[in-house]
Length: 478
Image (cartoon, rainbow, N blue to C red; front, side, top):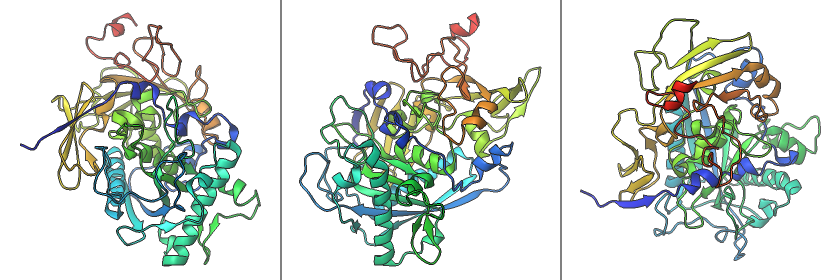
């Protein structure tokens, strides 16, 4: 039997470490926006009064560009502006060399995740450039420049310039056919400035973002009415893009890149954020992808989307019920519906789903790399890593990082969703969210702040007693 390495997950990560892409959206200049490209037509379909038809699978092609910076020795950024092609690292997750195969595997992990949660309705195909294994497009500035230097008003401009510069260099150097692709991703050397630590020794690392067309228009286009995006000639324009680092490991914590990728790809696909986009506080917490569930098990096992999100994306259907008894199955069930709908008014209804973090009941979940090496996740929060583990490209139970298991009841108000969808603020009103979990314990803790002395401390992102399940004593008192 191959020797295993134990990697312990510290619970504080789940409580305190939140993506800055969530919590630093405190000023209108960097509020996350909805995709205007809407590649799957989910935003426009919902705005017109319905959910997307799931009859035909969608295929999107991703162009991934690797970018390096002018080399430097500045202490305010991680690394020297170049990719790590070494074969040694103190980290266990997403180890170097960070060559072309590494990024192909990261995108395969992304593809496998979305194929699984969409029930095969979404296929992502990706190409990584440049073609050479250890090569990248060299930008003409260092990382500090493109970070925005902690200037909130400057960040959007510098991020837009980063995407523009990489695309233009790639077009000039390799004459790439951008017209063949639907989604554009820039992987840059270094670490993402995406986590809130008590002290950040490298404040000029670059934040990972989904860069929408409106931001490009406001920055590069200077709000010109005829601006169409980054012009690459022959009528081809890049109108939106995702910016990602080579890895997320930092401050001696092993952090998976997949969590960041799934969250930002969700934004590109038209999935609205379900956290409060003004202050970063949880809206559904760890119970779904478009909130803190993206970083379950330190970003290695992002949660599946909640019931409403699957309906919105056209990846599942709901059975409407008014009375009587009806079974509701988990995501692996084939003999019963996965989502039940109970109408309240023309705009409001309940959705009921059966979320099981350990569907087969064996107490573990497995992630595997392309060579078959395994990571074993257990219910106590530990991970066992086999030697030589590469990028984890598949996980057998993506809901394994949920706070618990049981029946989740969601209160949906489509009037709130439609009113706030374009601004991406559907869960910003803590007293009237568009997608709200009816917590079994009756406390509705998600999204509130509690000090360590409060009895509810640790429930702000969801907890074991939120679902309805046999034996949950809260369910007998409701």
